Length: 228
Image (cartoon, rainbow, N blue to C red):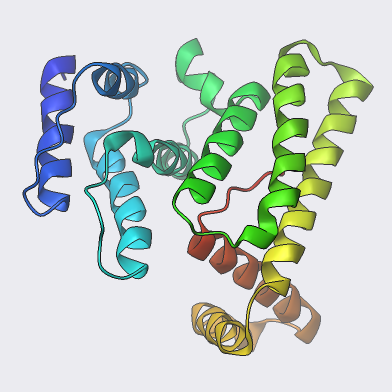
């Protein structure tokens, strides 16, 4: 699709999601959406990412201001990654620019973006500030070195990312009140209901905890810091 047409389609969809309020895709916004077109992100997948951003926004109550396309970027890229895995596209079947979306440097950039958006949107309590400041500093340093890391140094960074991810989730879980814990546990049980009869108790417990973690991330807009 022609890049300009692609951008206009995104602009029209964003306008509709904003209840008719026109947010123009021009300047830096146009450059951003043009990159999506160049990377081959299908319009429907981009729309799915925009939908996710709005779903979290609606969940916070009455909207205060229109949502700009820049705030949808992380969700669009996440939706694209999921779509590529689902349809079996690998790095050998996409061009070099597309394949960078799953590289370690691109992953770090996306994590920083998602954390910044989570703080800007007020989805995290002030008690997270110290932890997030520390995580942000580590990620910024990692981004500067990630492209040149090989062997043991790269493995060490990947292990550190897993540790930071676990730390962030632990604090997010601790911040939940009893009502929120019960709600998330109930949602996890619903997701796994069809599979529970065929699972061992241990397997079900692991799957349930993983489902709750996913729901915590979704509610708070948290990224997955761990890199796999």
